[in-house]
Length: 285
Length: 285
Image (cartoon, rainbow over all chains, first blue to last red; front, top):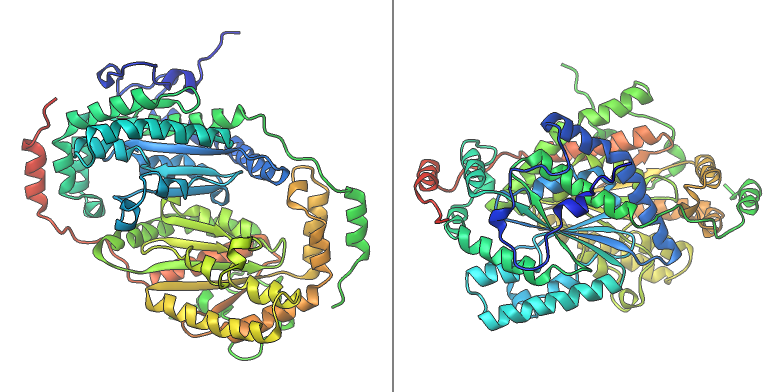
């Protein structure tokens, strides 16, 4: 039987220098059908995803330290929120911990840039999701010159050590760059301006950031190149088609869970003995 | 037109002394149809719940400090997890922050019992969910004599001040006691022992706790009586029927959101001006 390439294989950023211009943001690698089928394919992952997540959560009781950390990065409107709603939303919310990173507070600025990130690392058994992350410190940090070039270089190295440490502690990292085109971003921003229920998502500053598009693309290329390690790989997710983006991240998540060889933990007690206790040790009422 | 009693009215714990024996855990007040219809009724709340939650989230950008905190308490197997999965699970996970409180760690024990709770209060715009809460400190705290009777009394007062402070800061509290019968708990524990995919949820210590059922019921009665304030009311949710429990909490949540008079925020920028900028300020590529 032919080997079907996994989404991990298809979307994995290659090692070495990255040119985002070579990645088609409108593509749909690994899925040949249309939007309707793609949306259904995501929903169809739901049951297996729910079971695997519950097994991951259950195994934590056996001392298993493993957990997943999905890092979502991308330009404004690339759909970090949509991925959380549609793909992560398939999982029981009990087992998910989402953190949104905004511009750092004064307190956060007084610490190392990884300080606030460390506090949000998911505990064993959980699926953690970062809506933006420590990568902002080498993206907006670089483009807006919030740090010196030397400091940015230092941060790439600090991120690699930090992520290695996480992996050694049982964290499985899935780092996704949601890749959209500048044209698609324009359409999405215009759509926000055409719909009064979406005005709140729009900020005039978004257009100032958009003017720096090439600088941000370059910052992403460098960040991916310098932190695309074996233990913490990057995936470039074509995101001009929202349905494909959601499906692709759902598939990356389920493939990671499948690869963990999860199972329902054995009972660490005598089942029949406990049944007998339940039958005979009735509480006074 | 006849006034239909709201779930807030139907499930609100009365003021004064509470006798849980007077609350039917198998009841379904406010809903006269069967399980199938009840499950569908919950799903039917989904679209409105999603819209209201998004409006709550959007309003945070206008300086609105309001947020919701759903506190879930109940005996083992009463279904705190099921409520999160089925009712809270209807809401976009981006706008939800869930905290599960376990037995306090050594660090937590070195602080006031509200220390860890304060850190988990949801930010404006969010729906926070506490799976267990500060109430454990007057429930297991009382039953297991982890604190003196004087300290327990002090805690009721501390909880009332704390919750008043939260309400003054814009937190809308929905405190739910998921009320099951001892018989139903026995069935649910036996079901866990009959299903190898559920062994992980069972702990022999659950039967030791069960032996203290009457003491726990009494601790709940006292906790509700002493902290059932106008600003932070308690609801007793009949929970022997899982579908009714989920529906009832979903209804309590949606009623609270409806009462907030939420709306989509107005644009605080000139929409046409921003559209023109988007059309004319193209990034260099």
